[in-house]
Each structure stands twice: as C-alpha cells, then as structure tokens.
Length: 366
Image (cartoon, rainbow, N blue to C red; front, side, top):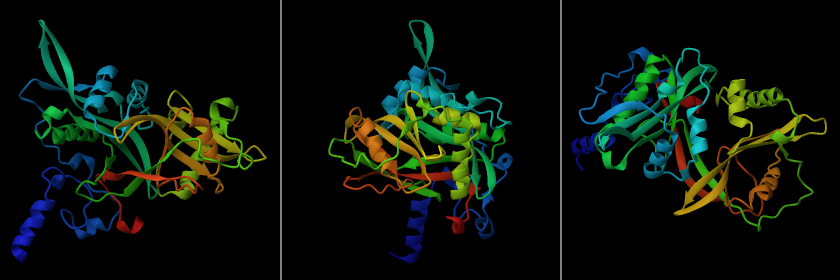
C-alpha cells in the first residue's frame, strides 16, 4: 500500500467521533508531549467539553432510576455480560454512600436513565430505554487524592442502538460529574479496550467447584465468618486500609461508612478473617455471591473480591471451596489475586480493562 493511502487508512481506523474530543489519556495525539509527561488532571472539570444537545425530539426524556424492578428487567434483557444481577444487589448499588464527597449533594442524580413515554389505555407510563450510573468514590493515585464517579451499567436498549444514544447518555453523566466539580471518572470495559490508554488489564479466571478438590484439612487456619465474631470492626477497617496504603499506588480510599457498607456480610457479601495466636488479624477474605452465565449455562458462583494476608497462605482458600461447593458451581478471581493452588484446574475467562476519564497516569508509573 502506498504510504499516503496507508496513512489515510490508519487515520480512519483509529478515528473515534466521541472519544477523539474527550479529555482522555493518549500518548500519540490530541495532547502535547509535555502534558503526557505528567500525572494528574488533563483538564480542570469546568473546562471539559460538554457542549452537546441533551434533548430529544421523540418520546424520550431523562429520568432517575427509582423503579428497581424495571431497572432489573431492563438489564436482564439488554445488558449482555457474564453476570446476572439480583434485585437486592442492584438496590445496594443504587443506595451506595456519597457523603464522603462533601460537594456531592444528591447521590440520586447520578442514577440516570433514558425513558420512553408510552400512552396506554388513556394513561401515560414510562419505560426504561437506557441507563448509566455514577457511584461516588475517592481514589488515591500516586499520592494524590482524586474524587470521582465509578461509572457502570451503561446500556441502551437493543432496538435503539446505532442511533448515537450511547454518547449522549455518557455526556449526561459527564454533565452531572462536571456540575459537582469532581476530578475524574473511572470505569471498566470488558473484552477489548476503548481507543485510548487503559491503566490496567485484568484477566478473569475461574475454578469449577466440585468434590474432586482435595486438601489437607489439618493445614489451614480457622476461617472466621465476620458476623460470628466480636472483633472490633474499626480494627478490621484499619487493617484493610493500612494494607493498601503500604502495598498499592492506586487504590480506593474507603471511609469507615463505606467499609461497613462494602464488607460487612449481607445476602450477597461474605467476609472472613483468620487470626494469629495473639488474636491479631492475619488474613482478610471478601467474596460476593453471584449468578453467572458461562457457555449459555446459568450457574451460581462466588467471586473473590479482596484477599489480603500477611503470609503466603493461599491454602486457606481450600476451606472456602469446602464451605461453598455444595451450593455453588464456580469460584471466580482475577490476576490481581494471584493464587498458588495445587491440584486445581484454573480456567481463563474474559478480560477487562480499567480506564480513567480526565486523568493521566504517566507511563513510567505503570
């Protein structure tokens, strides 16, 4: 191919009408070389471009997600992922704490939906046609505190796709983010990254739980279910945050309220600890009970969200397998939790990519 034609082809292949005008981290174009040498905000939020018409000329209108059953049914029919969500889990997501960010006055404004007006039997009803959610969170990124939204559940009804509604609903969450003067946004994309830099590639892995998994029952510490112990929850919170402060350069800063909300056991969250002989916390294991779709099969499973240990004692996970294998089919984890397990077949699942909006992390850091 002639060089000139090759350049045109590569330009068109890499061109993206939406992301090419957004403040996202690119090494080769859109921002100066000097900017790309710095870690931090790309633009002050008040200067971020959002000059787009957010109105609709049909029966569509903006709304706030309030009907949890309608939200659940919409995701079930249109949100294609490996995971199926329970109503209680979605309620938990929508009610996530927000007071840790003082300038954010209304959490519900970031639970955005796209509604279609339906006239039926003389009455007007509204049906969800699109969703996006911004969960308030604070991250520490290379010793800098960054207030942001964790953005999730971006979805447009299948019949309305390819009509440029996805960029419009992203602009809507950007508008809420910008009006609340937050710094950045963070989000995951499954299967393939977006056309700009990602800060982390995550490989999901899974183990089929069955009675063939054997281990030496005399060779593990006693796993303690957090609801069955009198341990000081604030002590557990300090243990958790101290670990991330010492071992990670990018991590979420949980307030005590958020920690309780995320890690104290409920219908779909289980947390365990182990103690040393002096009753000091030795290990922290947090899992989410989920429903997965693997190879068109609907199965129950548990996902390892956090595994913290002062020693290399992965063998305590065998006890987890023993606890859950009668009611669950798979155990899911990621390459962020490297597990050294013997005599267990580990399978690769999909990949996920972590992106930042309006924040640049210098390559030398990652």
